Length: 366
Image (cartoon, rainbow, N blue to C red; front, side, top):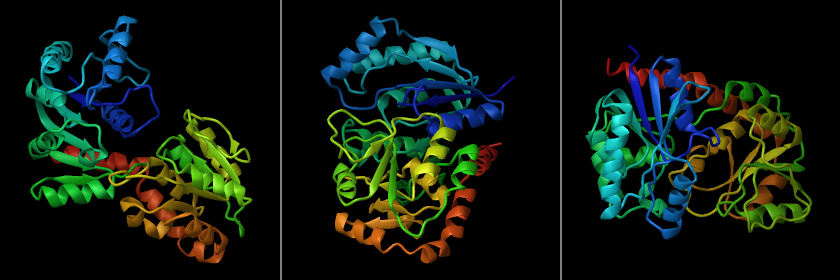
C-alpha cells in the first residue's frame, strides 16, 4: 500500500509552477500518494474576500477531489479566513468534512501556512512526519491575523523539520528557535530550461536589458522607464498589472507560461537581466533569481537580505544612479572571473539536487 502525503497550501494548483508543485511531484515520483489541499485562506478577513469565496462556491466550484495529469489528488475545499467567531466554527466544521474525505492517516504532512485552520487539520489527523515549509516572513509581510507569530511558534516546535527557501528566513528561524531542525532548500531551475539558459552569450556592451515576471506594485517601474529614457532597449516578458504605466519605448513580449519557450526568449533578448524590486523584500528569494544565475549573464538587482547573501553572483544597486554606473562600467573580463561560480551554483541547486535533499529529509525518519 502506498504511503500517503497531505500538502496544505494557500496557492491554487493551477498557477505558475512553484515549490509546492515541485515537492508534490517529487513525492509522487517517490511513489507516495499525494493529496494537495489548495487555496486555504491565510489572510485577514475582508468583505470582498468573503463575497468572492461565496460566489465561487455558488458558481459550482464546490468541494471536489480530482486527479490531475501528474497523478496528484487536488482538493478544493471551502475554508474561510482564519479568524475567531463564526468563521472559526465554520472552518472547524469544514476541517471535519475534509478529514472525512481524505482520511486520518498520513506518512507526511507538508504545511505552508501558520494559521489556525491548518493547525486544526493537524490536530485531527495522524502523521509520522510533519514538515513546515516556511516560504514567507508572515510576521512582517502584513495582512495576516495578529496571532500568526504564536501559531508559527507552535508549528515550528511541533514539526519534525522546518524547510526554508530564503537566507533571511533560514537565519531568522535558527536564531529565534535554537532547537528547531532547519534545512534550507533554495528554488531550482527546470533541467530542460537550464540547458537552454546556459546558451546565453556575454557581450562587451550592454544594450538590451530584460525583466521577466509579473509587473505589479512590487516592481520599481520608475527604474525600467528611466532605463528606456536613457537609451537602453528594455524588454519585459510577463503580465502587466492594471494601473502600471510603462515607457512606450519598452518592448512587452507578453506572458509566457512555457518554461522552455521562456528560456529561449531570455537567451534571444537579454544582454543583461534586471530584477528591480521595491518595498520590503526580506524573507523573499525570487525563484527567477536562480533562472537568472543559470544564464551566466550580468544580473542587476536592488539590495535586500537575500540579494546581499548572493552578491558574488549579482550586481547590487542602491538607486538608479548607482544602477546606471554599474551598467556603464560593466567589464566583461571581470565578469568572466565569477562566471564559473554562477554555473556551479546553478548546478548544485538543480532539480536533481533538490530531489536528493528532500529524499534525505525523508530518510532521516525511516
